Length: 147
Image (cartoon, rainbow, N blue to C red; front, side, top):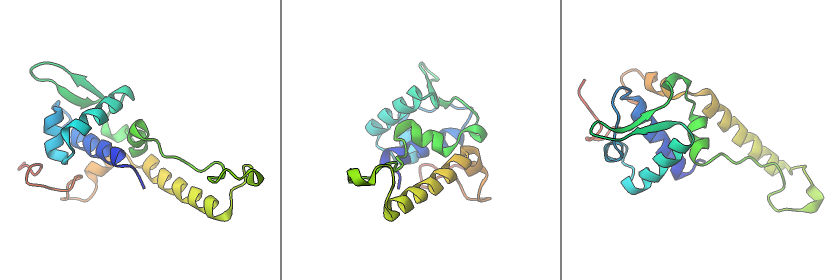
């Protein structure tokens, strides 16, 4: 449904949101999220260009979110790196369809819209609060911390 790039961006943002007062380096985020560091670097650059994260250089540098997790939606994160594509014309470029979608493509577009709505109405902060004792990222030995 979403690209691997979007998945990596979401993992990274959730990781940063779970440690709001601590800038994290690319290698730290990669270790926690299990995203390849080289690929993650490109994802973080895209998130930076979109204003979702900012980077700080220096001894205590790293990446941080630019807005509170409670105001950052999953759709903003996804659209920052790989926007969701809606079907607004015939994917087969059939001239006779014009802007009218066939029943199949109309239903596919409606489904994409429903998923887009869930992403638009879910904040990163909500993920952090959801699930009681469960954590917002799948747990691995590297991202489970006592606390």
